Figure 1 (cartoon, rainbow, N blue to C red):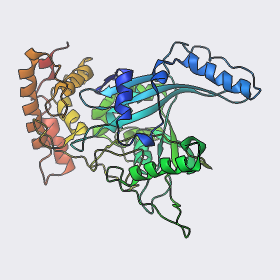
Figure 2: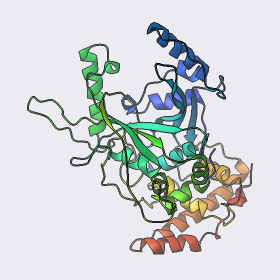
Figure 3: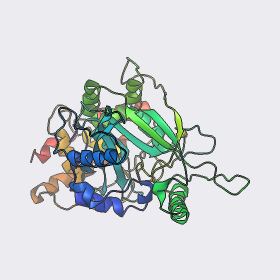
Figure 4: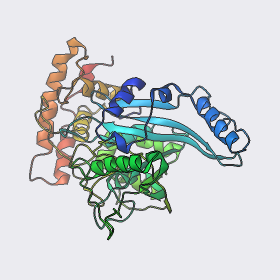
Length: 415
């Protein structure tokens, strides 16, 4: 688990079950139980079968790659039904040279209702801090509001804030073969995608029709690669969720080459090229800021995003829970939290057992429940104090800073 994030390993079978029951799973790459059992060596064997069918020579794993590495490593946010997978990828050019040797974030999902938001930050920060020596990439559908430029759908816009710069842009092709074996099956599949994109939780994407009645503004497929080196990634991971809360644009500035780093003015930027293809990928039912708690793929609100976050936190899950706000409050629970090597682990345990979250796992040690309830009540008070209406952003930060020592996470211990 990357320091500062409440993300933990997840049973692969449970991850797949969660992914499959997600209402927007049509927008995601499809995985099977077989994929859960595969290693990177198995994938190379499949590559060589394909190469042989095209008259190309065999390839081998790059030096230093463990053949037993699982194809998919699966994770979840502790205590809630939301998670992702990190896929190990080695791709080759036709001449046998390596085209890509790294990781890819896939299968991002949330099956929580709209009372739980702030899902993306813990997942992205965990992936950034995972195997920092390897390149990291992802892709997502670019469903955007009318008038928004390509690459500024909700999730592409959001992923840029986590340091992913555009590497490709594929225009959507409703006749892409992977969507179905026949025109009828492809049309049915695209219809399901369209329903997801136009739904309320999908960001209310609006299809535009040409003179022949055909949609002419399908979301393209946006791809990005993390533009941070290993040292920068380790630093971002160490800052964790609190670091992102303190400076939501800091990672993006770092990725864009701003030497000032975290803590200064925001700078937007992107590079890339446009091609034509289409395939299902990107996160499902995921939300980051204010607004709907579920966003299928990258359908969203274009460039109209805001850095505001819901501040509603109340004991018993009676109001909206924003994981960023909750994490901020818990992080403010003791000045030793940042320096304590068990802080991230403790935060994960608190989230896993917290009555603030729907679907409480109920497996928290009984002798710690009273302490946890006390902490939750104090955390809720801190959130209300720090996020009282009609106060400025600076004043809000001051109030949070002033209460950092008023609660201690060490009361929960290390176990």
